[in-house]
Amino acid sequence: MEWIDVFTAVVEQKSLNKASQLLNLSQPALSRKIMRLEEEMGVELFKRKGKRLELSRAGEICYEFALEQKRLERKLHQALQAFKEGNAPSSIVIGASLTTLQSTLPDLITIYTREYPNTDIKAVTGKTHEVVPLVKEKKVNIGLVASKIDDPALTCVPLFDDPLCLVLPLKHPFADESTLSIQDLHDLPMILFSRGTWYRVLMDEMFHRCGVHPDVKMEIDSFEAIIRLVSTCEAATLLPESYLRRTLMEDNQLIVRFIPELEQTKRTTSLLFTEDAVHEPSIRRFIDKAVSHYQAKFPPG
Image (cartoon, rainbow, N blue to C red; front, side):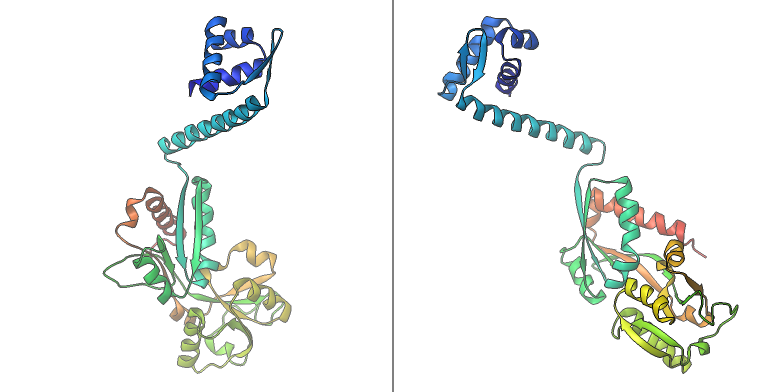
């Protein structure tokens, strides 16, 4: 809007002469533009005091509006530039089971927003059987679940397989044992996931097959709470390998021990999406970034 540039120049220069030089206009031409603007607005915008111009109250209101319009115009240009550069503001809604929300999603959000900081990522939690219909009904853009899903309405992309691992405090009696078997967990004081959760189902099935009955001291839904309590209570736990980052283990003075039978608990974390979803550039980028990240982190074979 030309009138905004003309008006703000006169306000900020406080002189028709200085403003005309800035706008590369003659002073009479600039005076006519201001008079025409006042006629269109139906108010006096300036009070003339000699060679100086001061804003009237109506002019102050007009100036505030003009500044806001210039701010919006700059924002528009920035958004269009970001769009042309492929980094336009966007949003992604992810449906995730509680376990994947805690173990897998933080890594994905970190690696994606590092490259695409203008993306707003939101998460909706639910059990796997609740996440699947959310994706199919397009209430979320992507599903992240700890299993493979066979559904003709969805594309399921496996990201990685990982088993449960035995996690112990550094001072635990088993910490120095080089070889352990599933039978060593019999009567072992442990903190496990709550009954009914996906990981607890895997554990209970394995314990039943192997005839093992650990001494379950606590049942908790939260990864973080389990990590903190294992050290405090000097108990053991089972956690997915993908969650056990080096800094997490070092900060909490924990150690990992692999037990061959725990390979039976290996499960697949997968992305779910509809065919229509990948037409959105931000969603396509998120899927590609997730696949490439986990292929590098967990190479096939």
